[in-house]
Amino acid sequence: MVAGIRLLTVQEYHRMGEAGIFHPEERLELIAGQIILMSPKGSVHESAITRTERLFRNRLGEQVLLRLQSPVQLDDYSEPEPDIAVVVPNELDYDDHHPTPSEVFLIIEVADSSLKYDREVKALAYARSGITDYWVLDVNRRKLHVYRLPSPEGYQSETIVSEDVTISPLAFPGCAIAPQEMLRPRQ
View 1 (tube, rainbow, N blue to C red):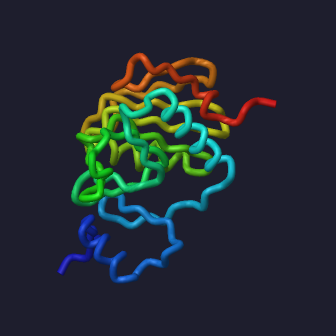
View 2: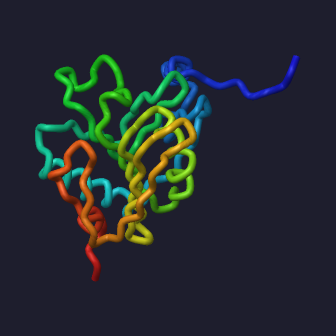
């Protein structure tokens, strides 16, 4: 027998959760068949999520459903919990399944201590699943990393936007957003 890594499927991951294998307070997500322990959420991270959620809700209203730190099923082996998923509204509010890539307009991750992970591991998982618009808000350097043109090898386009430049989600070109609107006001 050859030693190797056994990857978990999303279904197995769910069954483990239902069986009580994970502590209810553990922050976990499944990426490429592996269970990843997530960092604790700090106040700067949480406030950026709150600001960003409010911003998108005010600008896009009922055109979208905003899901905060909720699962998105990318494929049979990946079910991350992005900080914000801007998804197609669903009459059941996704009662019967988690959103899949075809139902996602935009994924946003807020990075304070997770920048490298969000830019490398998560970006690759999102690109491989075909997520067309992926943003990483770097709250420490006050920049927004915008990833587009997904491929099996990763995103073919990365643009780093300074806090005072506006950008629009691909699905909503009329919705201009400056990263500074998602960040703590300068003092």
